[in-house]
Amino acid sequence: QNPPNQHIQINQTTGQLLWPMPIASPQPYNIVINAINSAGVASYTFQLKIYGAYVASLDPMQSIYLRASPITLTGSSFLRGSNATVSVPNRPVIIWLRAANSNNNNNAIRTFITITDNNGRFSFVMYPSIGEGGLFQAGACHPQDTTYDTIQAIFSIEGLHVDPGWHVLGLTESVEETFLVTLKNVGSHNLTSLSSRFTSGNTTNYNFQLMNAPSSLQPEEEVTITIKILAYEEQPISRRLDLSFYATIANHHDDDDPDLHINTTLYLNVYVKPRYAKLVSTPAKIARDILRGSSTIVYFDVRNEGAVDAFQVSLLLPSLPWLRNMNAATIIPIIRVNETFPFSLQLS
Image (cartoon, rainbow, N blue to C red; front, side, top):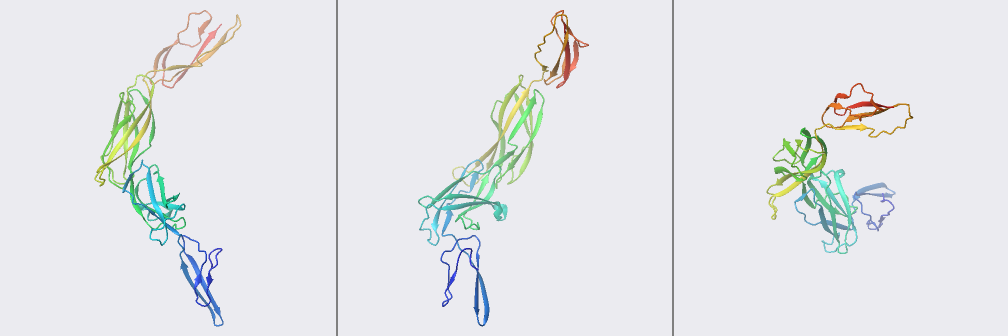
């Protein structure tokens, strides 16, 4: 059974097989030999694995990377069987990455393709995706050696993840609002000394409380945090506030920094409206032509778009003989928040 578009030759005298132009494949080929003579028919089957002409190998990697930081993977490619002495320039290389807890499931593998330089070296910069973290296995190989079974590096991506990362808050002066966020340790190390502080925006007129905030998180552990906010702004205002969460990976054996610090940020867009009534007329302006001796009636609505109810609303008109209020009362006892009240005027 010849491989596709290939012919394997057999020496009739020695029985040796010759494949002039083998093609590398991630799966083994099935080779079937049939012998036929006057005594009958015999068959023999075996498997043959054809590897790529060159191999690739990653350089040693550090043990911990931060989720927000790019990861540079470098390595070299050599001619197979050369004991890493003959480099392979300008050839494609596959770099693969697999979560260590995926039970070697190839469907969970991320692959990247790169090209070796003139010296047989390759380099690729990987940016961890949002929420990605934990322990990973990695390797490099010929583009057709895609079994991903040779682990050349093991490292972890550590980080905190807050969900949602953006939050829009519509606040009313002196009215407390509550919202929830989830904080997760996406790495494979314990996180300690969790804290938070505002790193951007003026919080002078705000009072924040974080409820259920933990002091530590186990790997893959997540908690729901309740955040209460109270605003004391006296004018309508829009602010951007950045709330950052910090944690420490203690004793990770980095000579430069024995305690590795990581963080994540919750971005808040805060809109505050003061606690007063705001009456808005629709339409804001009315123009009407009338004939001498005739009259007409115009209508408009007044809506309370403020934060509190409006009491004792008075309609004040100039003292003109041709202008008259058609409403039953000149004082409206109350116009509630988001409520609309109709008015009508007679012009004659």
